[in-house]
Image 1 (cartoon, rainbow, N blue to C red):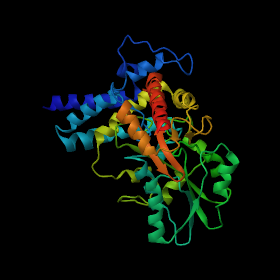
Image 2 (cartoon, one colour):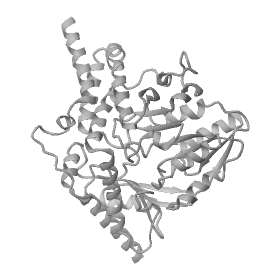
Image 3 (cartoon, rainbow, N blue to C red):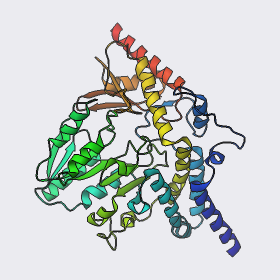
Image 4 (spheres, rainbow, N blue to C red):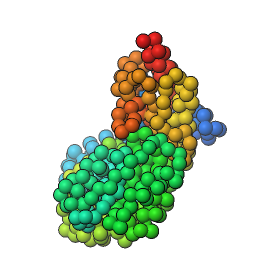
Length: 426
């Protein structure tokens, strides 16, 4: 029994380390597979090999990766392995084995983020990460926070709760989107700053329409006035090619089950090291006002298997490369948008300029609601999208991923044209 336990423990540790340090190709592809280098933005050969690393449905085209992304096969295999191992003796394998593997995962994520691993906490999603910051900051009645009506609802609600409970004041930014005017976007926020502003909340890539905000310029303007900066990076981390410190923010939260394609229920919190002690732990900790980033990881029992399997998703991401992923997904967004630009009555809510948009593309058709279009795409073409009805937007959000082929988007184009033609005949 002792030898058996020793063997399993060594195997678990080896698998955990493998998820972060092995040749990623071996986990995702057969040994004799040669991945062709992309020869152009539209070259599908390389990406067909990447598609094989996922269990993408052969019958349903998933174009709502903006909601949550699927994990690659290797991550799913690791998730199954860790789950089965933990269920042999949960408290032993979870707390004594897998819990120790969080440090190499933290280091791997820090490398991708361009950050100090002592600034990164692992949690379950962007909502948890950002709520930790929002409810942990020392704000008092009368302090002001600048935010936008295009922020994610969970974040807006968190700030409204602080407003109701603590008497802080919310100063709302009204944006006209999409926009390619950097000065307008910066001034929309800066013009709302007052001597009482303590925090500005920025959504790096707006989930409603894919608008990229000039976060660094706004952050620099905020810091010049002594204002702290929170960035919601749920739709930018592992998609846009940047390092978190490049944004000039103080606090950052993201979901790893979006563009990193980690198993569901994985997130990451980043706090600039000198700011950690200023944020109270959201959940109980023996040193809730301490300066150790791990005070934010007192989550109780959670899915250790899902957390540890994230290393395989990180491997696949690093195999592709962030810059290459960003280029590909921007290309795919423009691929379908350009092919329906001549459709009568179509309207786009997303820029085709890589400075202002990437994977997410939103369109509408005059006379049809976003819900009507989304339902027709699924009913008649088995294409899964999501309707967006928010502020001045009424359309459909289309979000491909690295496993999406041009042929998938050709079907989308056909579907949009057919829906528009049917509308014209009414």
